[in-house]
Length: 279
Image 1: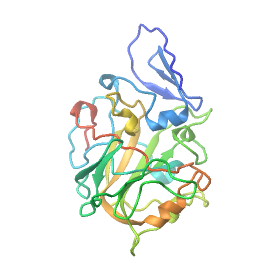
Image 2: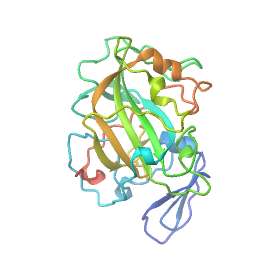
Image 3: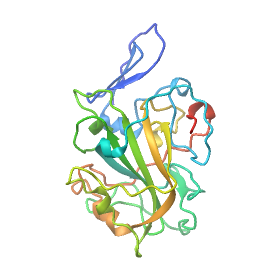
């Protein structure tokens, strides 16, 4: 990762993101990073005082006073899928997942009645090419289907959501929370991630809450914020998902997104000044 700053006499006002990984804030600050780092939250950070509304949040609360507004992204069916990834545990908090658990980068919420057993998760991190590391039956995962208004094909990281001719798209994340199970009627992750027809079948959201936020990831747990503007649609409920099906999907040689592990969690954003009002 490289960081380049330019002197400026103007205020920090907005952001434009390009596939070449140059982010311009206002009229004087440039951050040059890789798309991989941008999605992971390891770069493209700005002071939270000057950031737009952030994510994740407790979607049972409608409170927010962040004054930076942006247009709501179109429905997912009118946008293009650009990325799929998932987190262990849930980054958001909702009525269907209220208990905080885990540690380090994997400290998030679990589906009600599905807390991990004591002594579980002795392994973790990136998985082998044939599956994900560190997930097992009973775990909670939050899956993000990322959509863009750019005319692009699905691929790895947030960089896949932009193109040389589409430098400032609208972004949408459809977020669903699952508990992993090997029992019926658990869903098959393969059926939710097959885009061969040009569209992906995102599971229906139950008690969905839509709000304006940002990208997430544990890289923002250092007190900085994300400049990316995202329309979120988050399910309030948990549904079962076949453990084997998501393990079968994982592996850099097995999916177009090069996903082989569960991503870390950005801790819940609670400061009302960093949250958008939910109407």
